[in-house]
Image 1 (cartoon, helix red, strand yellow):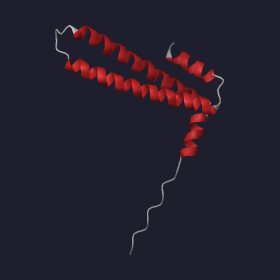
Image 2: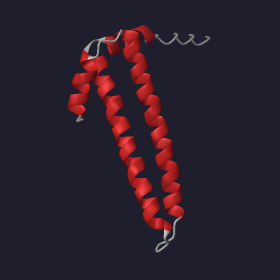
Image 3: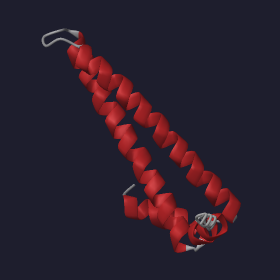
Image 4: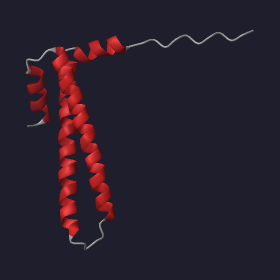
Length: 108
């Protein structure tokens, strides 16, 4: 499924705003997990010596990890765009907007 198809599908999903936010947070958590896996596999790749028989398997693991990370990133983007499109994201941003406290005036 392309990113545009995901955005359309997520936008049309009959979920409450709370459920949509939960799906967005789940997608963020999955992406964070996939980034961690990519980093671990990348470290393993860096430790693999050229010509080592494990290099091919490790290379395949790197490819799979990067692909999974990219797909997870697309899912995060699609949910963010769906939430932006229906106004949920702006509502949450307004809800979380807190004005910073005023700085104390300098003592004279």
